[in-house]
Image 1 (cartoon, helix red, strand yellow):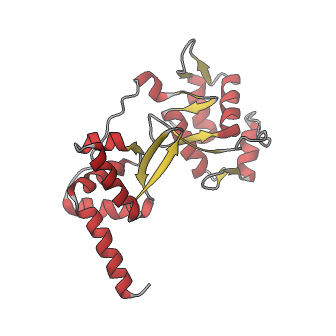
Image 2 (cartoon, helix red, strand yellow):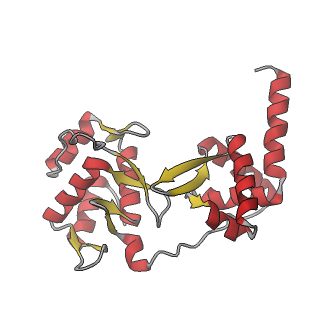
Image 3 (cartoon, one colour):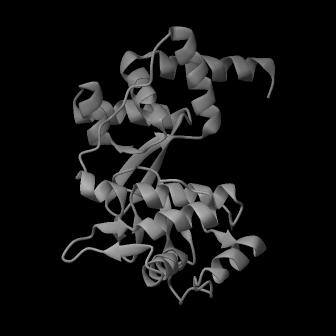
Length: 227
C-alpha cells in the first residue's frame, strides 16, 4: 500500500467516524457487546432505516462486523484494533464510555440454559477464561488443546467428538451479555458435568440455573474464575 492509498483509506475512515450518529454507535459498541440495529437506533435516537444506513457505512469501512444468531443480526466492533483506536480518540475527546442497559430479567442474566448448554454472565466469563488458559483454540470452530482436553476430562466432561451435524465447540452469542458463551457438544457436556457434580442446579419450570456454593469454589479452584 503506497502513501496515496493510505491517505485515501485514512480519509474514508475519518469520514465514517466523523458523523455524530455513527460516532455514538461506535462509542456504544465499546463495551465489547453486540447489539441489534433496532437497539442501536433507539440508543442514538434515529429511525431504523437511518440506523441501517449508518451501520452499512461502518461495515463498509470495516469498523464493525455483523454476527448472525438465529433470525437476529447483531453488530459489534470489528476487532481489538478498532477498539484501541476508538479508545485513544475517546481519551483525547475526554468522554466516558456510554452503556446500553440490558432488558433481560436479572434472574436469567447470571446463569440459565441456552438450549442444552450454559448461558448468562457465568457462561460468558467461563468462555473467556477457557481461551485465556489456552484450553480452547481457534476462532469459529474451536478445538481443545492437549492441556484443555486433559483438564476437562479430569473434571468428568465428555470430550469425545461431536455427533454428526453438530459442531464440537463454538462461540454462541449470549442474548443478555451480548458476548459469546461456549456452545456446541462441548458446551452441553460441560453443563451436564457441572450439574452431575452439584456445581449447578436447575430451577423447576424455568431456564434459570443456580450456581451453588460448591460451584463457586470449583470455578475458582479449577478455572481460577471468580463470579
